[in-house]
Picture 1: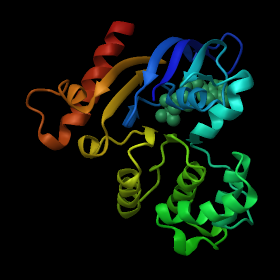
Picture 2: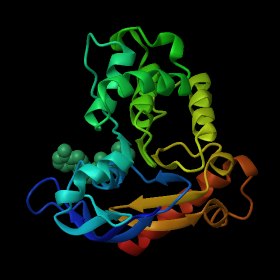
Picture 3: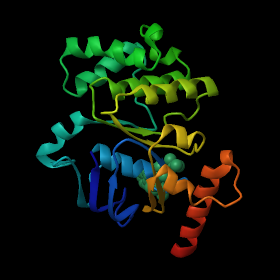
Picture 4: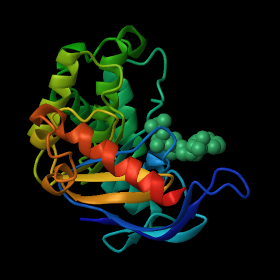
Length: 250
Ligand SMILES: Nc1ncnc2c1ncn2[C@@H]1O[C@H](COP(=O)(O)OP(=O)(O)OP(=O)(O)O)[C@@H](O)[C@H]1O
């Protein structure tokens, strides 16, 4: 599936360069996207979703460019859940999910029908008729995942979906990920390295807008300190990779 970045640069303001000449692929399967605050993860996901347009270079998914005349077809195949969910107060959870489907080009009746399926997928079928602002923060994030799932996209880009979830909600969410069809590819930005080896296939690590690691979970964990206990290997690998790369950059 890969979403391919070719010589991509992007900044939010003139002269700002958050991403510079990025050449990389977001791989197929389940990918966890790590990096410190401000590394540029949300920016990369925004570019991959086509919500942001690169200043130079291009982002391509299966021959479709994220900008220009391909953008509609590109967006139908890729779903994005940003960190800040756009909630419409007064709408029910189901209205909100159906609306997201309609925005992606589904007919009203199809979006309405599929919205309940998507809410059931995130275990919120019984809350479908509740107003969105009556749900907890973690439940609202699961509604956001349902919005990403409603139109049957091939790629889900999820930006810190488990932020603010309690351990039970987080487990529900991880089960949802585990139950997705193998035809759905996921790239998930997070600071959470727990259960990395049981949930994901691939790891990306971004630092100052540059990828300092892209590979399998096993390849990533091989960077851990020799003595790291099993539950700490992911943390150890992350810290060693980012510290080493910082030393190279500075
Ligand atoms: N709307 C914006 N306007 C100006 N600068 C921005 C904007 N959004 C992000 N930035 C800057 O771009 C850089 C990358 O931010 P980004 O949100 O992509 O990082 P991140 O890795 O997702 O961080 P976090 O883990 O904190 O969510 C940061 O320096 C940030 O200050």
